[in-house]
Length: 206
Image (cartoon, rainbow, N blue to C red; front, side, top):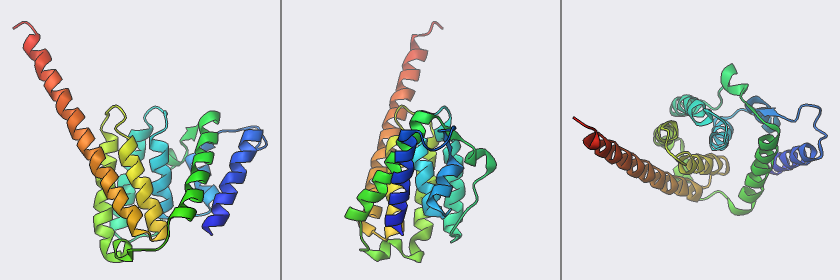
């Protein structure tokens, strides 16, 4: 199934590059979901994480709300979630539509080579509450407007999504490690911003 998905995405990416996808070469988030053929929580989470790092104004903020909805559904052991219309209609321009297709195809192709079921206890149903909390925490870091602050938490969520799809506990552990670095980065930048603000206030005339 995953092999068919990567082939389908690669074909869509090649058609997009050749300009054979129709007159409109832009894709919406809902279009990407349709290409996957499913709207499982893991698929939706990966798509939101990928889109959140693209240079689209307000994308990270908007995606974070969707991630919080996914986190809640994850804890409640739901398997799928319908995208709100506003979120699903978010469109990428022609350039980033093509890059997103190629990036997703590469992700799945690489995952098929590198990932396999192992350390399955990390993807056991009993761990869903932990991963739901983790998704919510990464969404919070993404929501905070920090320079390059979206990159590491988004990568963490991509690893989580793929790890859950392939039942690969190593990918889930890497998700936690990358996310912790992202949290540390966010706290460091936030601390520097507070110090800079305090310094600026001290320099203002009283």
